Amino acid sequence: MGDSYIILKTTALKNGSFRHDLHYWLGKDTSQDEAGTAAILTVELDAALGGRAVQYREVQGGETEKLLSYFRPCIMPQPGGVASGFNHVEVNQQDHVTRLYVCQGKHVVHVKEVPFVRSSLNHEDIFILDTANKIFQFNGSNSCIQERAKALEVVQYIKDTFHEGKCEVAAVEDGKLMADTEAGEFWGLFGGFAPLPKKTSSEDNGDDKETVTKLLCFNQGTLEHISFESLEHELLETNKCYLLDCGAEMYVWMGRGTSLQVRKGASEAAEKLLIDENRKGSNVIKVIEGFETIMFKSKFNKWPPTPDLKLSSEDGRGKVAALLRSQGLDVKGLMKAAPEEEEPQPYIDCTGHLQVFFR
Image (cartoon, rainbow, N blue to C red):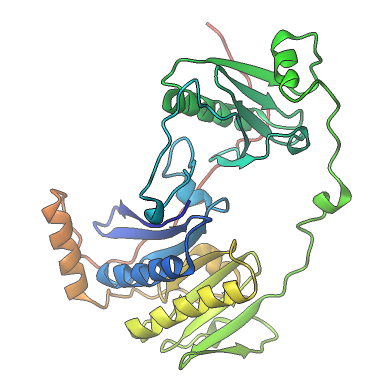
């Protein structure tokens, strides 16, 4: 939790070229210096890869589904960091600390530790109570079967990782009273059964705040607001960097004609803006001109067809090819500069009726 990390995901495309996704993950206890350095190093790594990677700023607890899909079944950050020497506490039956986690997500799982109190529970989510001898999975009455299946994978991971596979597992359904043995044991840890409250109106309307999309140009070290009636592609100039602030997420668009120093400066400006506005939990996605994501293009009123752009740095791709070759990887096709294909939708919506056939 006290460190920052850079994750590089490389995908081989059918045309022989590679697509790169760069993520820099910030633990909740990481320092501002570490976070800023991770952002700059990500820009430098992108330049070495040929300047076409999509970059994502990830914060603990607010990770994108793309990043979470790399880690199965989930990400469970551990206490510590460089300053602490990565000191890890050995888990055993005598010093085991009871912990309560909330699991959210149908396709990939967001796991977050919450206070071990009854008020943390609700009807919407799934909770995992990890005790010394037994792991309880509490299924909220409004949770779906996909969420329960994903949470069960997390339960198995906790059992194998922190209990050496030697503990009991129990499922508790929301609404079952003390008459059920396992439900009674579960509620006994909270001091006895009591109905869970419904969500308050403030919780229900927490995401209803209207956000105003802002476009800022990074010019000579400062951010300049750009006024517009309709967000058009023509507002972006190839020799500049821009910040598109959409509230919950922020995009950094880097023109093909910008230098590495300008791109670093735009990244630092985005980090500073989030800190100044106390929005450290917001995601930042950085795209290069010509290789924008579908989501970025959708923010604009109209986006013209993308021309077939060639990578700007043969030297950069050569360095990457040498690096991959030294690791024993096949680099055939790395030097090809065919434009990458549009990314497909990451997941299929699996809601509907489920039928199970036994044989």
